[in-house]
Image 1 (tube, one colour):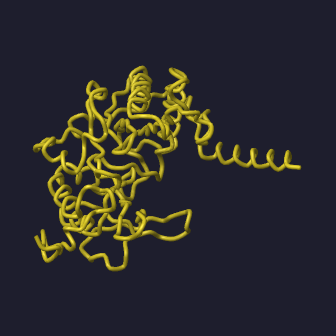
Image 2: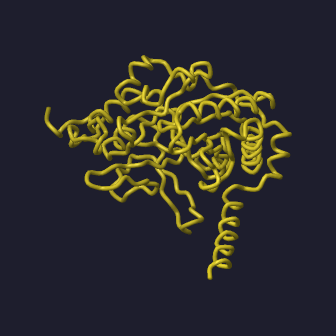
Image 3: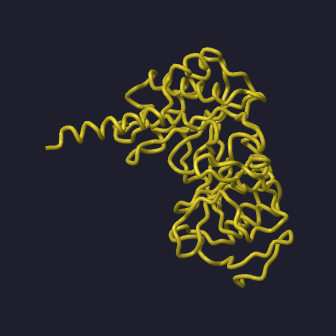
Length: 319
C-alpha cells in the first residue's frame, strides 16, 4: 500500500508503512489501526485529563510532549495548566474523541500518560501503586509485590484493580470518591507502600534511591498530586510495542507483559472493556492509612536530603 494519502475522520495520515521505531516490530499503520480499534476502551480512560504523550520521531530519541506544538489543529481540545517547575503555562491536550486520538497517532505518539485528576480539578480520582521490579528481575517479582499491596488494601477494607504497566511492572488502582484531598491520597499511598514492605521486606522496598533497593521490587508511592501514569490500553515505546493491559487478580500468575501488544489486544478485547469491568466502585480512604501515611516522609524529599547527606559524607572522607 502507499505510504501516505489516507484519511480517517478528517485526519490526514502519512508515512503509514514506516517502521514505528527501530526494533518495534510494528509500523505506524499498526499504531493507527490499534488505537482506532481500541478507541472505545482507551478514550474513557483519557477523557478530560491533561495528557502527556511519548512520541518517537524517525531518527530521534523518544521524548515526552506535554505542551501542544504550535501546529496543533484548532479542533484539538486543550486546557492551560500552570507548571510550577518551569514557571509557565502549559497547553495540555484533552484526548476526548476519535479524531484527536487519530491525530496523536499520526504524530507518532506511542504512549499516553493522563493526569490522575480531571482538568481543572485537584483531586486524584484513584489511589495508585506502581510496582517496579529490578532491572534483572522478572514480571513474577512485580506480581508478588502486587499481591502484598492487595493484601494491605484488603485488610483496610479497600478493593482494587490491576493492570500490567506494559513494561515489566504492575499498576494497582483504587477508585476514589470526588473531592478527596490530594494530601490524604498521597499519605494513604505512602502507608500502603510501607505496610506492603513490612509484609515481605525481602521482596519489596519503598527505597526511593535506586542503589538502596538491592534487587527488590520498588513500591512507588509517588503517583499522586500532579503525577501521571500510563493509561490502560496505552502502547509502550518498547520492542514489540506491548500494551498496558488489565488482568484479573486470579490470572496474574498466568500472563506475561509480552502477551499484550498492539497486534494481539484488539482480538483479546473483542468489544469488551475489562478495565472498566474490573474497577470496583469508588471507596473512601481508610482513616488508618491516611493517619499512618502522614507520618511517613515524602519519598522524593527524603531522597533529596539523603542524597545531600551522602554527598557531604563523601566530601568529608575524600583526602
